[in-house]
Image (cartoon, rainbow, N blue to C red):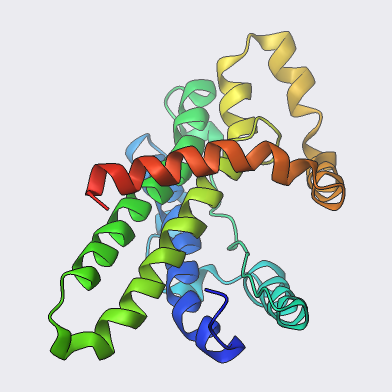
Length: 222
């Protein structure tokens, strides 16, 4: 997407990003409701209206800052997150197990969306020449939709609280180990920032992201 201007990139990336983080959070709330906790529903968070899920920092400040910095380097990129959906673990029928299921629902929703965006790319490729005006933006949008959803899925599956993978690990590990891992949660964000600053996070994420991306394209026939 290096041939796009900043405004063009923003135009094709905004919708996939908003859907990626919104559906991710709705999936958490929907599974929690199925497992006995209606908190998200009562707070009006089981909706695809992105306004209900906007986090001032993660949905606005960070993506805009990344866009500005990326435009200066010639490689614009958007990343962000939504306001977490609240889950009252005491309402869950089997709290330890069900919290793991609630956590994994978000990344699985991102995987499903990656497949949907891949289908959008396939549709764009097969549109007749007379619809090239729609095919090109759709292909760009679908390509970004695949990438952002795969990155969010893989990133959130890292076994580091408060990421979803950390909550899954806490749900699967025996009591003492789960407790030790859960103690990392207050420091998880800073650990993540350190991994990003040293480029270690990129080295960790690249192989699984590329594998899943290629798998999605293969399954869809691209």
